[in-house]
Image (cartoon, rainbow, N blue to C red; front, top):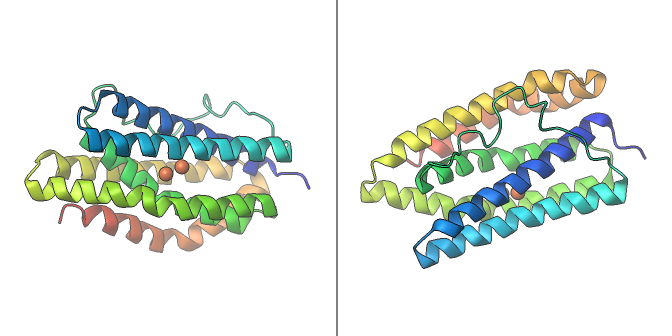
Length: 207
Ligand SMILES: [Fe+2]
Ligand SMILES: [Fe+2]
């Protein structure tokens, strides 16, 4: 069974997002001076690298070609707000916002795909995300309780970025004709619920 072109794009860009996530966690782990936090960052780096490996193996197995998805990112790029001078709080707030929506995307892909192999992988990824979010959630809440004045703005900024990324993806999917329409219908059906979910979870970190 041929993997449809929209799915090829989603899988290629997910591979890129996972591997970049892993690189960013590695960068923060490298400069972290506190042992326990370094362990958490390193753990998360290898989690995202493992996800990239899952995609690599899937692509090999299903014969999905490597596509140049990077230069076509005309909408706010996923990891764009994370720069060389981002603090750990700013970085983790961004990760938290993005990872809240990640399992939803995997569920949409699960509903959209006709491939058992892809469905299987989506279930694996969905199960991993709870653990990814939880430790970051605990950390940001603890910092907020301690009176770290950085948390509020970092969380608000992260939420704004995530919303822009999410909204920006709609016209992108629309370029894929009938397949795009089918996928967008799945997204649209969940739009309201998903928005409330992401917003509530982000704002509960600071309220
Ligand atoms: Fe991941
Ligand atoms: Fe993750």
